[in-house]
Length: 441
Image (cartoon, rainbow, N blue to C red; front, top):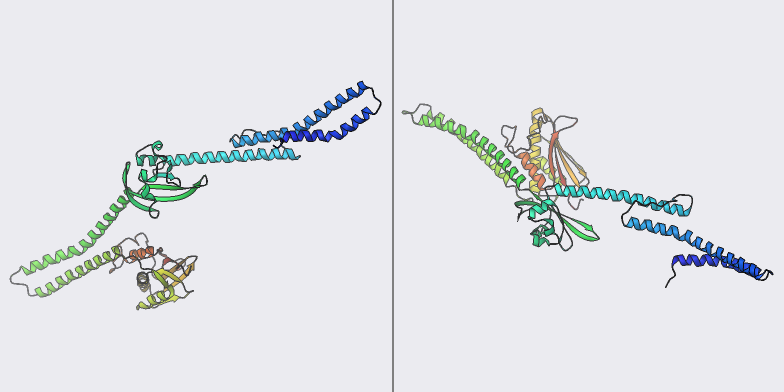
């Protein structure tokens, strides 16, 4: 069994004074002194020797005990103790100084951690989103108030139960985020499920967040229906009102006896108006069908430059300048992407023909994306608020779905479509941003 450190220090101190003590005793015994003198001096020397050894042991062991007490207090999260004699001039004082500095650092970190934890608990308790934490066995370890209300029980009755027992097992299926229809004791509807992973105590844990999206979705659905009804009502009235008026006029002509001499001309003009409005209504319904039934893109690697050149050649009213750049490939449905570029170039040519300006197309690669720019020198954009509103158009023969359909195509490919006035020049710029294909990236 190893000897204690303080006893080794004491023995070392005694051994340090042993040579001198032996020499002193030898001189006393062989120096011709009386027995009384030898005994007295020997007792005094032994007492001084023991006192010095004990004092040396205390001077070494006491600071170590002090440091041990300080470290124990730190381990117990008690940061109020400080060591005296902490200074930079000697090794022991520097050690005590660093321990005091460590205590200050740990105290500040502890206070910060407590404040952050208090803020997190407050946020968790007040947010209207159900938050659950599960361990690696999918047993519940933490739940906030919203989660308690959703499951209809207090946390004490929920903790340590598995996700399947709580009816949350479906939240671990499939990818996240996702929207699921789930019935809970505290509510039924559509819930957006988000998951995350973190480690606590060296073990993996799962964070599950449920937010009720039923009300926002219903509100968006109502607003969409209201907009659709307004648009449909407007278009139907625009077509049916003249048809009804012309039909009434033709009925009046047909009921006359005898018929007027020019009744055939009136009939042809009236039927022409009815046919024209019927064609407009047919175009409108076809446009709405195209907007509502956009198929999922069949993506494959497409060389962007060749596609742009091909689409530019389709425009016969004016030449479109194509500014070539480095070859770039994108993962896209070539038919849908071609339709998107046709719409943009057609709009650009329409605008440029109003002012006699030019149209140009270019593309630029940036990191993992590529941007296609369609510039025109037309009158520019006076108001961009309604550009992407379905069936809104400023053209006499426009349908109002070109830009909306284009944005849907771009977003279906993981990209974006924007339209803005050109900076530093007249006209407008349409920008299509698409992710590069894996081979190009």
